Length: 100
Image (cartoon, rainbow, N blue to C red):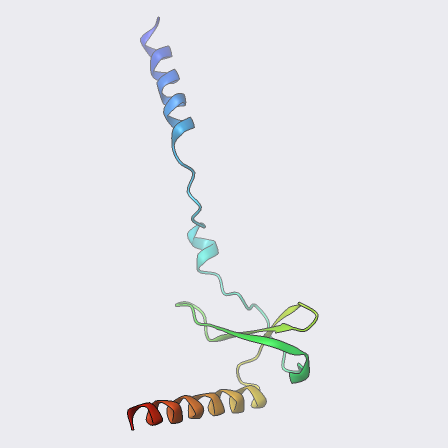
């Protein structure tokens, strides 16, 4: 057998047994989840809020609605700012009670 044929067959065999990685390409990893945001979402329609902070993106707030749709909410929305302020105050009070 020719040496070139053996080399090609060996390379193909090695390539077939190399494990496939599940990692995403860098361009997909660094993308911001929220490309556009909405200002008007009824708080009654929201089932769950998720807060994402990725290195190259500003704070992203994703609301999962009761109809299972997901929308990105503008973090500057007044009711959301008040919600976050109340949540932080609640956490501070709980921490103070633990330390007392």
